[in-house]
Amino acid sequence: MTQQVIIHQLQNDLSVVIEPMDGVQSVAFTFLVPAGVVYEPGDRRGAMSILCDLSMRGAGERDNRKLVTDLDNLGVERAESVGASHISFSAATLSDHLVEALTIYSDVLRRPHLPESAFEATCALAMQELAGLEDEPRQKVMMKLQEHHYPDPWGRSSMGTTEGIGALKHSEVVALYQDCYQPNGAILAIAGKVDPSVILPLVDRLFGDWEPGTGIVKAGTSGGVSVEHIQQETSQTQIGIAYPSVVYRHDEYFSAFGAVGVLSGGMSARLFTEVREKRGLCYSVYASHHTLRDQASVMCYAGTSSDRAQETLEVTLGELSRLAEGVFPDELDRVKARMKSALIMQQESPSSRSASVARDWYHLGRVCSFEEVHQRVDRLGCDDITDHLGRYPAKDYTIVTLGPQPLDMPS
Image (cartoon, rainbow, N blue to C red; front, side, top):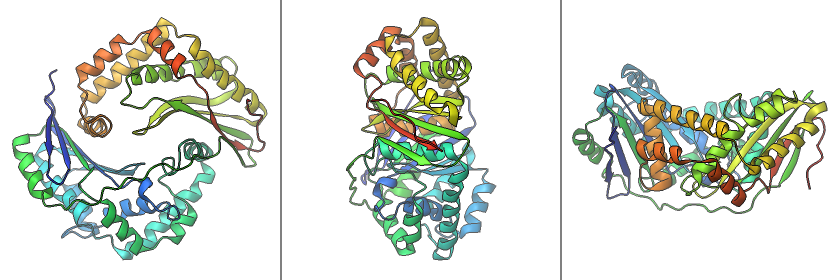
């Protein structure tokens, strides 16, 4: 399939990337607004999640109820999330409703009510989510792992802290909106059944007079500790392991992604077979590749009984190191089949595609075609992964554990 990608840059630096898709009746769009957790004051962690929530509680001429009702009447499936660099607003609907949906979201971005009357309840919900982490030890340990592995503020969780949310004032949320919701650095990606000749003039009209902001990006400061144990009297121990990898735009990204696929790409992957199936050490084990714009990592998790936690840690670290000795052709074949399946499914989903287009533009400044990705997957060989791991081995670990006893860490 030949892809036609239309790039449109507004004078205020808003990037609009449109990819029409044949054979679909729906359309999806993703807004990335430069208002991620890296812009939060250090003593107000969680502020961006509060801002994101309040942004959808009325905008323009619509109050909270009418905003939700109008989106529901258009059949819009929507989601909002807060990342390191951006707040993401995504929506999918039938193509006939795209104009109306974009118009509503222009109000959300440019004219949100941010009602003070909803501020206290929004903060209370955020506090409840933080309290719920005590019942989600896996999520708790992986959040702490990311916080320690990346230099602050890049490893922060969007959930924030009880101290940060407790100290937050409504006026500070409004000030963050004024500082961070800006067109420069923002991305609008649209994919699906879309006519660019209709949508581009609409985008110009809705966003062309949006005044740019300062566009200041916060740099990383210091990293966290390399090892931490979180004391919690449970019968289970949670183990999080992270080590550096290459970023999405790196020439060896597909080799790095393939290596993680060998480790954790289904029930035939090494971590599952070696740590869980053969030795019965844990009930859950996996690895994933996580990338920011300028730094990346492999994040691993294992959940086990406390009496087998030490062995689980040692065996998992051993498998991470052993991967550099080489991968087998049958392992690579399985990884490539999974990568191609994911690519095909993405090709059939406007929602997945709009998110990928936005990600590509942010990380690469261009959009990767299906053909390019398919060819890079096809060309990937066992030697490519082995050579990559020779240059970027699993080392310099950050390790976080949660359970009744700390574990002995490798030297």
